[in-house]
Length: 363
Image 1: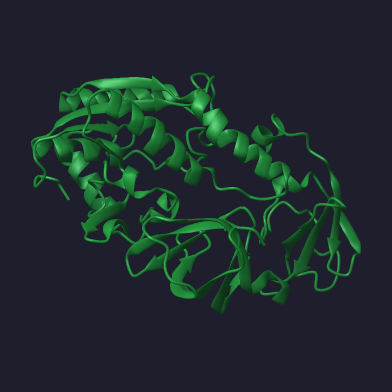
Image 2: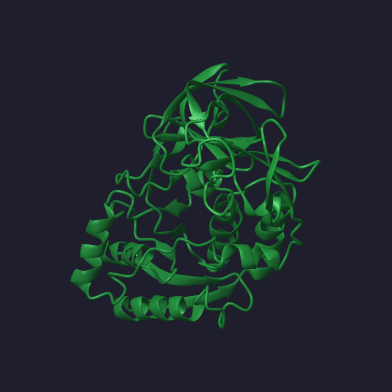
């Protein structure tokens, strides 16, 4: 969508230095809008850190803005990021869960701190390079999956609300990634072939174990089978997630030496990592989970409610039934058992292409 149907507007585009946000800025300017770029610096010390080349990203964002002849703002939200996102990230890992910081980063930084900044500087809208779409009807404004199923990012934006969405534009949501790269190449953007970022939101592609150890003390413990037999040692529960296979260092210790081991649970009280052998061990599957921190983008549905859901990014939609337990907790029953249900991760609900909202997996 080019948003050429909108009255001429002032739009601030979140410029990450990547191809998606650069093309988003181009599409909006080409549609006749007044466009300015905003580069968000949200992690102190990353100018010299090998794992988060913010200086390179800023240079790429500036080059894109120079090509498009638009102004680039550089703003620092590092304090807000630490307080609203990173503190939660550390608390969750300390509690033995596996958080998804990108969800909170979008809610609190990209669509709150950035949106507030843009409004204070006279913008009518903000725009990002997310692969999602939005639409409006008499029920309100809805978040939709991106047209490219390989790039749809609605999973990470389910915690937004209507007041954020009504001021947000997603120019590349109707394009595929190859189409976006082709546009970038055609108009001469230097970052047209730049690799997608896969690191922690704003922190970058670091050696995760080393990075986490800087903030949380590791507490080694035992690796045990479901029956309680000790078969190895772990480096700290925070370094492992449900369904993990790599890095356990216990291959061939018991049973079938050819079958790999997988993390199936964490015993926080006894600091034990619980493992099972075999990719399809029954203990790795659950038909029911409990969710908390439920958020609905529009009005909450009437319960019990049937919907599609994802318990991880890029998972195919899974049919489920949502039933409230009390004001805080919901029970989610799936038609098909789900593998590696991970506390701390998000469960996101859909009706067709509409993202309804979601919550945090409790257990």
